[in-house]
Image 1: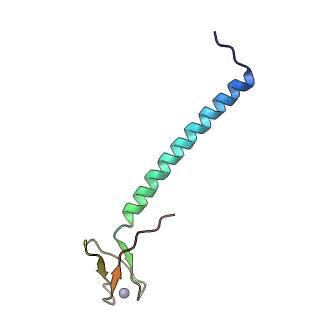
Image 2 (image 1 turned 90 degrees about the vertical axis):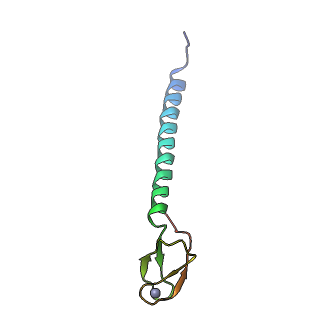
Image 3 (image 1 turned 45 degrees about the vertical axis):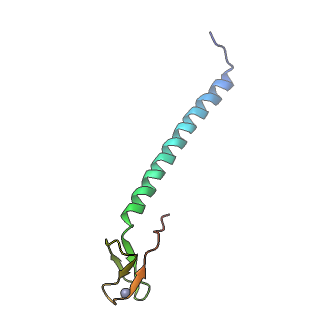
Length: 79
Ligand SMILES: [Zn+2]
């Protein structure tokens, strides 16, 4: 039989629980960021008229439907 002091047992249980919560949190955060990035991948904002529009083409420059200016694709910012 293994004998360990009570305070050591409490510390180990607390550490295991907090480590589990931490890894679940990191996993969900990764999934959330991936979904958010995927959702706004084709979303653009015109530099001239500030209109937000969606462009699913593969061209590097997207044409604004309102003013017709060409906009560069930038990587989406996720918070
Ligand atoms: Zn525009």
